[in-house]
Length: 239
Image 1 (cartoon, one colour):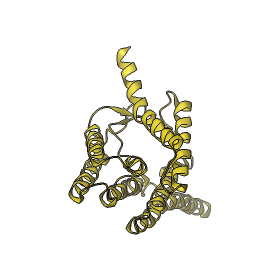
Image 2 (cartoon, one colour):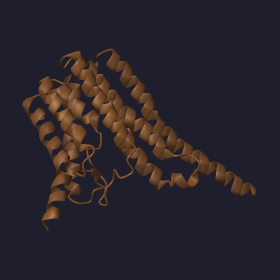
Image 3 (cartoon, rainbow, N blue to C red):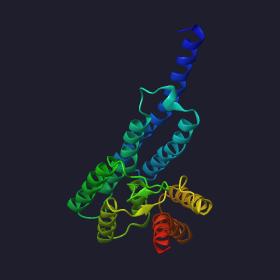
């Protein structure tokens, strides 16, 4: 191997490792979120989960743009991403539900157990993506769901029904949108994501005590994101 080829090989490896390190930084943010949860500082907790979500939102496009898999084929970015995603999307939100004072401890612990168990099974399913890049089944975005529980503080009965329904939907062939990769209605979907994000930031800065307008924005945008791909699926079936 020529000196130029050796240098190029090492450069490729360093570029790929830098991207993977960026992905792995999400787990450090997760650790800080866990500390915030221990202190019962829920706005800080969800703010850090939001930061981890932002990392997760950009690391994939960066990795694909730089062809990271080709530069360092011995390192699995997908496996690393799954580790970080499970902790930030599932495990920590479930822990927050268990410790959030929503109802009897045994019910909260049972619901948290349902979340971590069903999501672990979902993460191992290789069929989680449909042909149009929508998710097959509820994609375990419990960080968003538990955030809404903390904002709206519904009765434990409502939390139990919603959690149970989403846990069942995890294993059903019902489509859920990927905001970036699903092409159909993508501009509208991205706009709704922006609305959701702005309302979430306002909620965090107000200590999760939201106005009617912010609450309505969160609720309506959440309903759109939860249902839009199922609507697409239904329209396709009716053709």
